[in-house]
Image 1: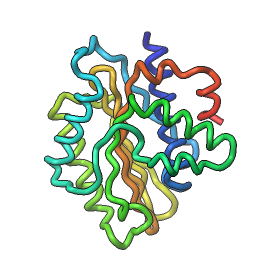
Image 2: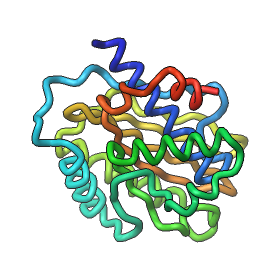
Image 3: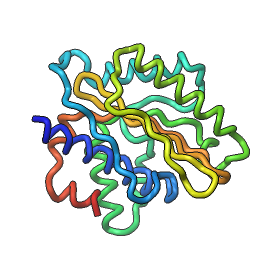
Length: 207
C-alpha cells in the first residue's frame, strides 16, 4: 500500500511538472535534479469528502487569505483551446492525459498578471499570500507530508514547494520567484486516480 501511494504521489508530481512545461512555458519548475515530495499513506478517508470537499476547502482558504484573483476549479487551469493547440506528439499525449485527469484535479489559478510580469507583482507579497492559503488549509485539516523546501533558482531567485494531504487527496503548492519570474500554483490531486496511470503514461511524463 505504501509503495503504491508513493508511486501515485510521484506520478502526480510529474504530471504537474509536465503541465507547467506544456501549458505555462519553460522555466517555471524547480531546478534540475530537484525531487518532488511524496505524500504519506492516507488514513481511511471520509467518502463524502471527494473533489467537492477539496474545492470547498481551497476556495475557503483562498478567500480567507484575502485573494480575489484567479479562481479555484476542477482541472489544471488550462483552457481546452490551449490543449488543442499542443504541437509535437508528446505534447499532444500530455494534453490528452491532462484532459483525462482533469476531473480528479483541483487547482487555484492566480490572475494572469502574475505570470511573466515581475514588475506588476511583488514576489514577497505573492509568497505571503501563499503562506496564508496554506495556513488556511492546515486549519481545515490538511496535513503536511514533508517539511516545506526552498531552494535556489538561478542567481537571485528561489523555488518554494510544500505538500499536504487530506482524505486521499494530496496538494502541491509552488512559488518560483526571480528577477524575471513570479509564478505561483496550487494543485490538489486524487491519489486513487493517479495510482491508475499505466506504465506507458508514467513513461510519458518521466521522459
